[in-house]
Image 1 (cartoon, rainbow, N blue to C red):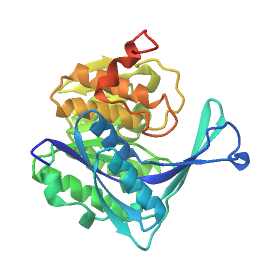
Image 2 (image 1 turned 180 degrees about the horizontal axis):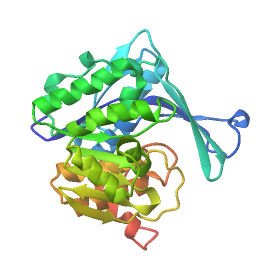
Image 3 (image 1 turned 120 degrees about the vertical axis):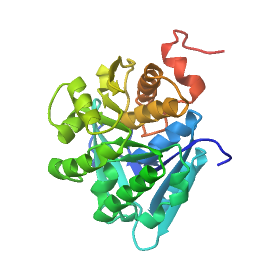
Image 4 (image 1 turned 45 degrees about the vertical axis):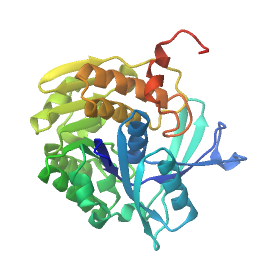
Length: 316
């Protein structure tokens, strides 16, 4: 790693099929093919902001797995992917049913990504990282994936590596009760926790955003960040509340905006920036992600962050 600080993350990245036209998928004439996955979205976001990232995962021995590896590696992310010859790469499909709404369907049961195991995570890699980032999606995939997440977190804790945990609830993968059990196991082991207000309520009970953040930090983390979408964000950091307005944009596709927010926050955290800068960059990166179709393609590079504030439509 040449001595530079780096972030390790892991999870399932799937092939992504989508149509850009509005209407039932059954009548779509064409589909575009790409990739998407929460943890790799964060890794790409970090890399574009100047923080080296490593993504670990498991893909099938198929063309979709080749594409997943190729696309993430093309973004400069260090890819450590095991190839599973007996399970396929997962698939997600986006359907733009109305101009304002879309439906995401997952085909990941028994996928290679759901079979990730502790042996796929390099202990030395984690122990040398500046931060380990994990999400609540991984333990929802399978008992083996849950064990892998807990193993990686244990390694990070043993080596005094910071842990970031994004709850990232997926109702199609597990129940609120099952998610709460895992959330309450992992949150006390994390330094930074990210959650939407609805996700935080699963973990610690219903309440206002500031109350939710304080309940999370009471479990152990020094930082709890509540993502509020168009209402911005709220964070409790070392006991102090910080609020951040959202950046107003005409959203094209909001899938991946939460991952972009996390990438922005963590990039500034690794670079030693203060809470207000972390939150300002996070809301900017989240806004950028909403401007294009796709989970990660709209993620900004550092020199682009100020573009959403400019009044000049053309830069020359």
